[in-house]
Amino acid sequence: MTTIAKPEQGKTIPLWDVKTPATLTPYWPDKPNAERSTIVVLPGGGYGGHADHEGSAFALWLNAHGITCFVLHYRLGTQGYKHPAMLHDAARALRYVRFHANDWNLDVNKIGIIGSSAGGHLTATLLTHFDAGNAQAADPVDRVSCRPDLGILCYPVITLQEFTHQGSKLNLLGENPPEELVEHLSNERQVTPQTPPCFIWHTWEDGAVPVENALLFANALRRNGVRFDLHIYENGGHGLGLGQNHPWASQCLFWLREQKFI
Image (cartoon, rainbow, N blue to C red; front, side, top):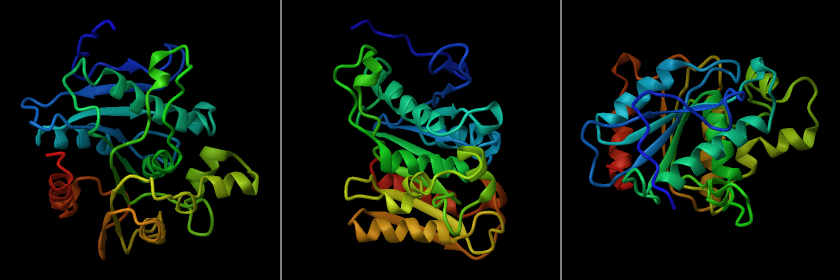
């Protein structure tokens, strides 16, 4: 297998081809940690945009702790795409990083994913809909597993049912989607014992994505014996990111140390 040179810091990589608006942007830490861990970052934006304060800002924060990051700009409803394009992009991102992990001195078994809001929904979708790859695929990247080794969910959209965020649902599925598809992408209903461990945080006063989303997912993880760390804070509006010196970030780093990612 030909070794692929490490891509340039901050330079976007087309995930499919130059005509498909899905890209991966690498952020390399100045001092990689001994664990050689990686996290793919999925910013929020209601499946209608990409919120940079949940993308590159998260990548630089994790870089400071020695974690390599790749920010995924997945396809959007406002670009004319619908499910499963977004899930295909997230799966491709995990496969791509895992396929090149040895080339770039990354641990193939320490590739996590973090997502916020609608990016949290896409993260939860991959955490519950991953596959082991297709051994017969013509593209060698497609032969690799897209299962994340852990997930971090920041004020995530989880369900597409009672407590959903309607704008995200509309951008993802369009008007009047079939109920079986809504069920399939209500990720609290898709957790299995094989779902990776998760760090989840949300706020009680989130007025855009109800806190029930986080609670539903945590409850499903518990029922299936999947380890998780859940934090519900009273105060804070939707889309906090790293703002307001919020304690979630330090508590997430503590959890990442427990997972041996730091």
